[in-house]
Image (cartoon, rainbow, N blue to C red):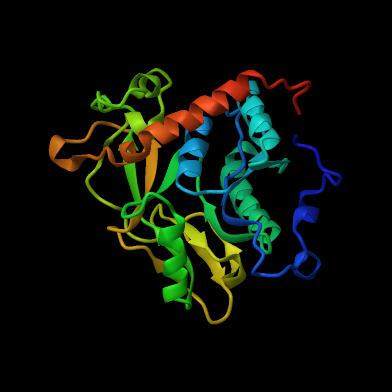
Length: 290
């Protein structure tokens, strides 16, 4: 894990011609790219929850970049890599801490975009505390594929953003779901935080994209930086899907909160996936840390 034959990050970007392959032979339908972990990030259960929920909703591949991470997260990444569902790359930008967050994000977005230009049909870009959630389907492909097919002029679609408050006590998971106690004990954000703000933010404001990598020239954090000629950026309708962001903030007045346990429809599947991850995590050993 975290090894490369060439430590120069700029050399990771694949030349389009060298990496070209038959567009009909995609290795993965949906790949999800994460910004670089930094600051000794060590929330391994948050990571397990996000990957598990994303897997349940149809993401096939996960790409991680590590500037710095704690031992629990490195161990989790090693397990995901051994399972064949994740790629992990070192990402040492040699920047001042104040510049690191956004600069590391931009460069990792570009790297993931071009690395998977010919291997993944669609790419998702989001943080580890965010989930892309379809609201009319239980999986992302029945949402994403028709959007791109029905609107071929759209090279990317934005998921509108809303926030689920991790600081406010929320209602317990459904009592009739046998493994709900597991979600509470392990603090799975996707299932235990179901109070959200009552609005979705407008496009370009905290939104995150899904894109066809062949229609995008430059990626960015909340929007697409530059589309290829002839294509544009579009927005997913709020009733079809939106971005769940699990973060801590001050309590909102009751009239500005919504009780939204939508993900409990797939709660048992998420919990089972997390349990599988934890069993394999407990049997994973890392000889050395970068």
